[in-house]
Image 1 (spheres, one colour):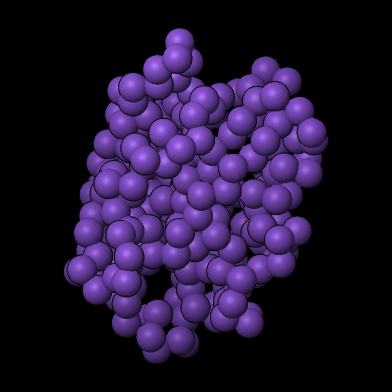
Image 2 (cartoon, rainbow, N blue to C red):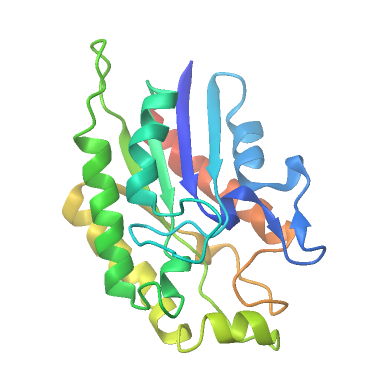
Length: 212
């Protein structure tokens, strides 16, 4: 059985912007991907609200720096055949990083951690699929609008930068914004229909990378 590790933020955790809770298990993109791939593949969902690529959030109630968390996650789930990284939205927050180039640099560091991890037991290291999150949009939600002030233009640059980064690092690439868009309810999260669309869109890419 092959294993796919999905390392992400609230979009992977399944934050529901309609009910301000969590999407039903079957609606999360990781669950849709699991169903599409079938029993021969195990999809491991590692989503955390607020997770960044490589930056500290000193107001957080838990560790959200992806660089600090990823090695332990890799060690927990090894061996894995593919690591999907979908992060960068939270890097756009004021006071975190705020730039697309900073998020791309964080993605590069995460890929390096995967490639250089001590897998042990003669396990081979996994392939990496970099996923650009859907673009942040304008919202009337005062809280999220303030949190992501001036982030719209930077967010729109992520897909292009991530694509170039994937080419440079010999990783797979997928633009989740090609099949899904964020909700105007808060400008950053996905409703159930759009999060399901990400899972459906990723399936053929994951199949190709796994060779199944």
